Image (cartoon, rainbow, N blue to C red; front, side, top):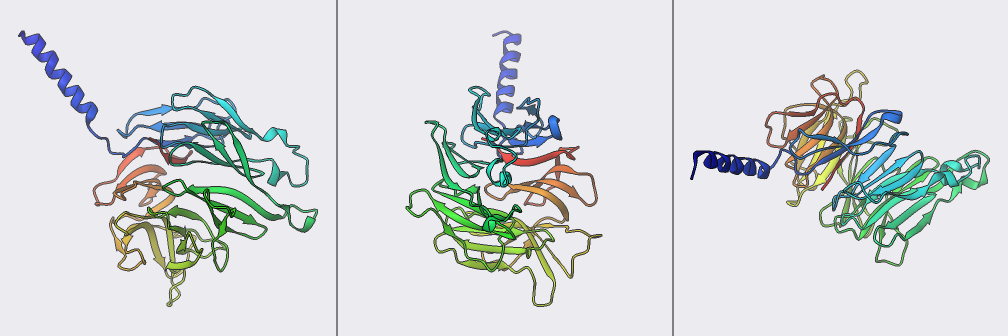
Length: 364
């Protein structure tokens, strides 16, 4: 065998080995980048280096969802919802908000398309358009499951009587969280696709806001608020069957200090991973710097697993909680997309200039 052939074979084995090497990310990362007409969907490959522009819409993309099953993409452009396959082919219009008269009194409840969410198996697309829709990708059937109730008490002003939009699907795809909006507040409900009742409301003492995630077994929903708003901060757990509320991390401690909690995720071990800070009081100058922590399922034995304090716009956990992708900054630095591992290893910058980046989502 000639030396040249041996060199070629060695190089082929080397490149094959490199191709099979896992990247720093568990999946490809999708996101929006750009403002206005320049906003497009991009994909960062699992190698953490390769970036690819996915959409090329002249009017700009307003929001999107990606199917973790096959990479199909749903996106809203100019108040129209489109769907394309993972290869970018078979583009079709799903919903057109231009069919609604923009001058009707309650147009804000009747004419806006958005809040797109794929089911885990990629077979159903939930979205809002005068209420909640479920679109079957295989058959093209679009079911208008819940219709917004429109204006409160028929007043001439636009007050929200009750409106419906989809939240996240349960891991098995059998249940869908519904965000229900009102004139002054919101709450959540669980829709079981196999049950006769339309939904079960979650029981709370006030508005339910602002971040939601299912537990792996689909029996509970975690709700957290990491912001200084009219809604109390903290972390709660809701039983998906009964709607009962349990306080995991109270917003206000007995000593008057405030717990801000964001982006909660329950791991298969039962532990909770989230971002947290306890402050004596909120200060606009200080802001809300959050640390990556772990705790037991009831919120006890909280442990900080990384030394940094992050100012976070968005965070996206790996399913096993081993890492999180953070849109924000650390230690007063610029707005970036960062890879933060729960083992405390050095931060990795995935996207340097992230001022116009938003809507982080895992792909297949």
